[in-house]
Image (cartoon, rainbow, N blue to C red; front, top):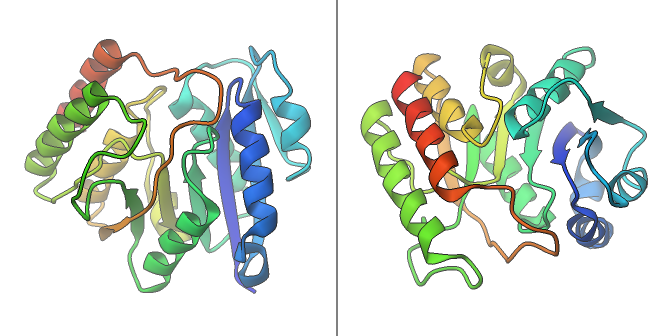
Length: 229
């Protein structure tokens, strides 16, 4: 079976991880691929996230000297580089994406894409249940600006589900420390002439906890990242 590494950044997401654990046990992913998890857990986490993550994997990294999603993922990727795998997934820990969606991302990569991401909007239709209108509006505006800047159409810039071929991820020296990570990934696809394809994935409201995204502040930071990458 092909090895797949799934990187999950975590800060106070015990409810989301409980959901993911149950979903993973029901999913066919583990039957199709050799799955390895890397959890990177913010040292400020005060709930049972680390204990639940230990039921997925022995690879649990403390995020001590940095804060933010981008910094966490970068630390996990640096760990992955010591023992790489052909495919890598970045997955949010809040339970809003299922492992069936992870399989969809892997299918796109196996069809030849260098980078794949899950879109909540590519199929059109009504707004996903539980998603705030402000987040939808902001995401669509940022996706339009990213599409123009990178000369590549993207319908869901702020998705929390990305996948990479090994050679592609090794080329992506990203600097983002926060929620501007995805904007930089889209820009680095252009810079490195990598093929990036979106695929429709289902999304559900986060399982417990609270979103760490600050709509206006982080939206501005994401905009700056689009322009600078």
